[in-house]
Picture 1 (cartoon, rainbow, N blue to C red):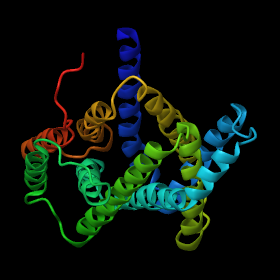
Picture 2: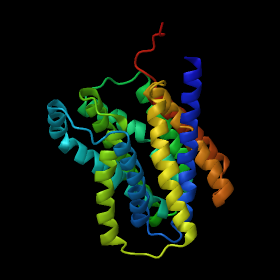
Picture 3: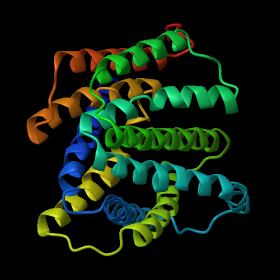
Picture 4: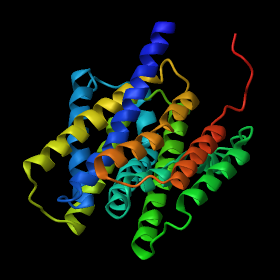
Length: 302
């Protein structure tokens, strides 16, 4: 068991590093690729990889009547999940990164667990976690410290609004996926591939309407390929595998380390500034969101 947990934690930490590096690579790629086209290319290739893998492991096998009924009943939820989780969440994230520094976008997105908490209470009747409101207050204080005196006006404020929309969309996706997982035995690969396929179709449509065709250099192509295969397809599979041995809230706490990772990577590779108030704000946001995600039941497991 200890060996399994070590492997799972290693997988989770590798995922957070890959996802943190995504912000740096996206900022570099956005210098030549329009944001919606960039997102569409990344997730089209990632969906192709996951879809091929799904078929290779027997995903096209004949389904039982019960499985067909479950799939039919969940089509509307899968459609909304795909649109929210990929068309909106990822599309808006790329657009937001076009306007914001990587670390600024990450600070805003780090409030996604708080959005999930609020939506879970509103639509799933979930209990308020112990210290949940206190943790949210600490995180908000951290955001206030981080942004104090830094908002330059129109463009950056628009970027923050767009990234907030991305976080809310991802929170809705997580709530829907949680609901599906509670009532049906959808495999992680099947669920990820199906919702990603739906959302990618939406991204391609938006890219065609707003961005159109665009020439891409070899460097841009390599960034898209790496993001799609390593930072998306591989990372999602590793993350889902880690969930077999680590509880979801524990993984969420590990995921919060991304804020610090992005701050350091942005400082090293993008030259983004890191002042002492910003560092203090980042630490407060991390602590606050970790508190929000503390489990309701604090009893020790046998």
